Image (cartoon, rainbow, N blue to C red; front, top):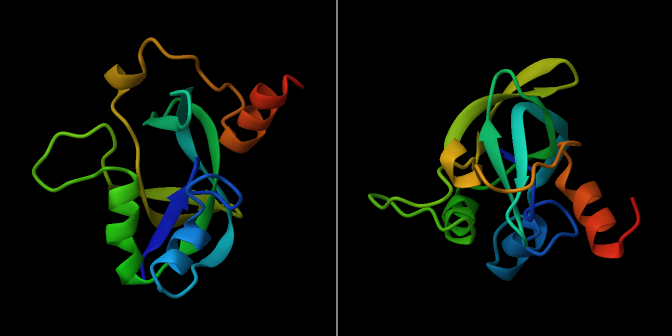
Length: 138
């Protein structure tokens, strides 16, 4: 079963909640393995974040799930990743840190150029940032 690192709207309670997506499509529920981090920079695209992978960047926080193979096409659809087409997000496999250990995960980053003029999320945590932004409470 593949493992995915979700850092934005696919996180639990967010608009594209991974668990809700699985339920909607009659796919087995993902198994939460824990919280993880990946080196990069997180940017605010308005209704969702974009991760630019960067070995010199700060930690970007997300959740690691083990998922059924059948959920991958659903995630690709949510992230608008289509074979043979240039899209904002791409699906890649990277090592994500979880409890001090690297875990091979699929994730959906964006190209550096796509985020160049957007606000950076310095905390690396989309959920905390979005909640503070949307409520006006820092």
